[in-house]
Picture (cartoon, rainbow, N blue to C red):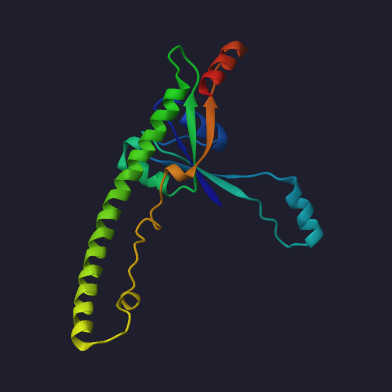
Length: 194
């Protein structure tokens, strides 16, 4: 099962979309998580062909975080998601979808930067320690006249970012919340989004 985090500016329609997709209500001030079955008639056909005793349909989880990227709790919940969908408001007189997408991407970039900087500092500290060990080993090798390669024995590696769940790399969809605007307004706003 995969989880999809819904992100967007306040009042963009994230919670409304969450309720529409999951048919569950939201809990005010808390992260909402609901699992929805994915209907697929092909699964029944495969069950019959394979004569399976049990039919298991795919499921997808949706995560809606009040405040989105503005809280540490929201960021933590979104990091647990497998993908992110940006919800953009295209209704109302002051709707500016392109600006909203830019703001959300900037928020995600700042959240990623808050994770990357401490990881780099930690890696640099480990790297300095390894270099001191190499310097000491080289001095010892020179004194003892050893010919064994020191670098291979100590194994320098800089891999702190491989384990960091970056949010910007998870953006998978852009969802446009249209509201009840007429068709011409929808077309004009869709063109502005690019």
